[in-house]
Length: 196
Image (cartoon, rainbow, N blue to C red; front, side):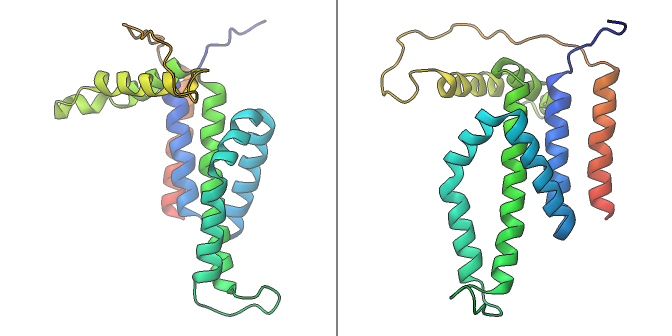
């Protein structure tokens, strides 16, 4: 291999995910539909297990959004779909697309980052909280405990494993040139969404 591949800093990947969510929130119509379709397909191919789990856990929210927007929004009635309005179904499609983009982004992040890396990335992004005298370490520990509970094999059986970790080890990584490129891409996404 000619060039060594350095692992990206978790914070840069999380920042890119947030930028994608902000960009999706600002777009509508065809751009939103294409973005949703593309990102959902990528998540279904690359992070299939995480995406299927997130979709299964969100199925009632997705259905509720469809019904609430599609059938309870006043507008032009559709003869082919009794009780639904054209404006309501368009509003439902727009909001469902945004939710699918969020679920796809989370699935991709969970596929790329292990729980300790996710916690380390969020801890890095919370560094400005030190100016407000808020401990980012406490937030990181709580997040790690939550992820540990969710990811444990005994999470749904009602019984505890009986042992708790007494320390939290987060991976140490230093941002590199690829992280700066991802930061620039995230900034471009946010600025492009803001200006359009």
